[in-house]
Length: 294
Ligand code: NDP
Image (cartoon, rainbow, N blue to C red; front, side):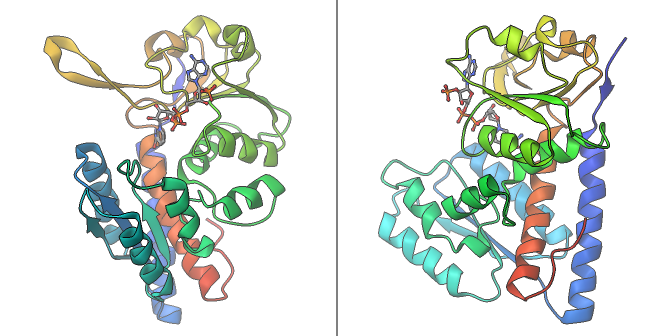
């Protein structure tokens, strides 16, 4: 039997529509227009595409976009100065620094300089701590998107055996924290995990965020499991044309899983939708309003 495809494009379009409606109400009823500043440093082609897509989505949702483009050779002091200005600007409710940053910049220092209430990427150590402590705060967009996708399959994640492959601060760890908050029984696997296939085989819900093209094989997956494939890997396809694949061998996994996200068209579009949601939540928080229930 072929798995149900968890269609990230449709699910994210629905979320974006809801955010757009909430932004419209906020503007109509309170005169507040949430604003997002995306900071791009240098000319990394992939980063430029991501930033362009984010800006388009921001404008379409009725948010204000305050994009900032700094040269590749910008100094750390100049970038810190820009962040201080964005922190102080009341029209800017969210700040996102497009990663990676060039080698002369300490990314940890830059992230820590963002006002935690404007940290729509949820990477600031205070927000990471809030998530780990079960306190309200801004949550990283990709992990939030993963959990929202899983919840389109399972009304409740409580009691599910969840395995997250990957323990990065931007995907693996926050996904695991969110799943724990949903009362799943969570295992985090990583490059030192012994017998990864056996660990994966326990999972009712498998989240693959390891950055290894198609490494998770169909035979590792528990029949009927839900698989969320976070990976975005560019490999050489037919006639040398690049092809994007996930961390899961999708074609074979599809014959065994109960539900699975495609790559592209799964987690990726949810990340942008969750960024819009986070900017809306940040604007509400900064204006003393409750976060919208979307
Ligand atoms: P990182 O490289 O920061 O982390 C990868 C994690 O996977 C590490 O914890 C590493 O373990 C683990 N890992 C690597 N190799 C293996 C292995 N052979 N077996 C088991 N575990 C392994 O990557 P990110 O977390 O930033 O991203 C993961 C993937 O998600 C990438 O493909 C990335 O492109 C994609 N991504 C997609 C997004 C989206 O919007 N869809 C957004 C962000 C990322 P260890 O800690 O031991 O080194």
